[in-house]
Amino acid sequence: MDLELYSVSDKFMQKIDDNDALLGSYPVDDDCRIHVCSSWL
Image 1: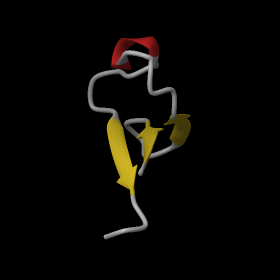
Image 2: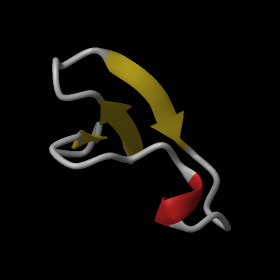
Image 3: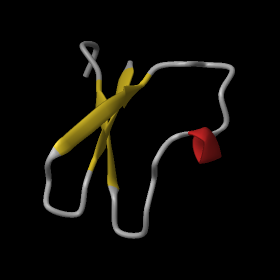
Image 4: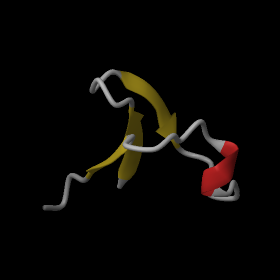
């Protein structure tokens, strides 16, 4: 499973791929979107 962070305007910002990092260490603002990508669905 991969997590990707998108801006309010749906522009890809970065992957959330550090399992030890807290969500606050990423540039998440109000109304951003976290997209879940999975190959097993």
